[in-house]
Length: 133
Image: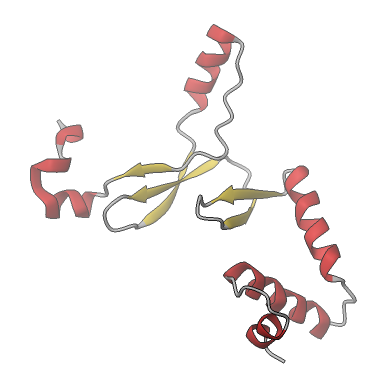
C-alpha cells in the first residue's frame, strides 16, 4: 500500500511531512531495519534536543528539519519571487554586542531573513534599489 492510501484509509490528513515519514519508514523496512514509527518521532525529537537536527517553524503549521551544519546559517528569501538561499549567520557580532551591553543572549537560530533579490530589484526598478546607494 502506498503512503497516500495508508493516510487516507486511516482518515489522516495528507501532509508532506507524513508522506515523507512513511517513505522513510519504508526505506528502513526495505533495508531490514526493524523500526517503529514512535521510535522515528522520538529520535527526531532527541536529535533536535542534542543539536544534531535543527527544526524550523515555517509559520504555516509546517516544520522543516535540517541536519545541523558546523557553521550557523540562515535562510534568505526573496519576498517577490520566493527564491531562497542559505547564508552564514550575519548576527554573531550583534549577538556579542547585545550580550556585552545587556547580558541577554540572542537566540538567532530561528530567524528567517526576507529581502528582495538582485533580479527582482532590476525588474522592479527604483522601488527596491534604495539599499544599493
